[in-house]
Length: 235
Ligand SMILES: [Zn+2]
Image (cartoon, rainbow, N blue to C red; front, side, top):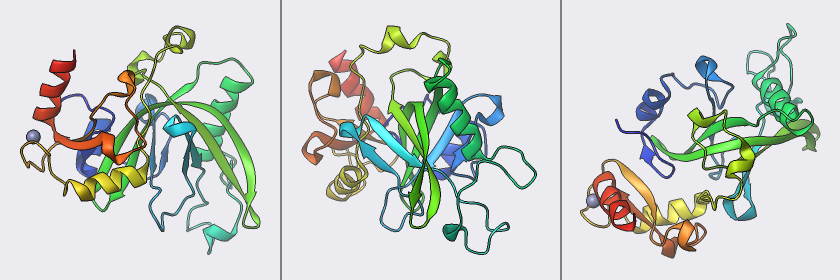
């Protein structure tokens, strides 16, 4: 499989293959000692209150509940930074990395974000920098919030200086509602050839040329072949 790109639509299996890891949890800090991965879902009835801000540049991701074997009703108890044994939970690991960046001047943790838009259908939303984390009182309990900013860096460019890249006009994440509307309008098929394999959410006018991620009019489904043909023309 070729290198996965932001906007690619993949199956659960392809996602796990791409990470070389069976992804069972929503939060995966430095899996295999490498990159961090989070899985999100902002669909109706999704278990966590994730949201987009700043036109899709910023993702606010909710931390995770205690496991079901530790609480009868995980949604009724505070999210935790440590396990009963005192080791950091995923919340604790991401929280520490966010504050090492914010307060300690460390490089931001790079996090790959995948989103489930329908059963068995996932979208790769790209690489984000973890830039902040805090605790918030929601429905009578405490939850963690993580702030991630979209970046053009790839997960392997971890050591590059952030300042060199901050002026780049990087892409924006396509909101879930737009993805779902486009999926429905294009009937889950490439608008050029009708293929339903290796699909990609394509910006008709690229973000770098002023195209928006926020309107369905500017987003379409393309298969890998037609997406490649189009980017060849633009370059
Ligand atoms: Zn096609």
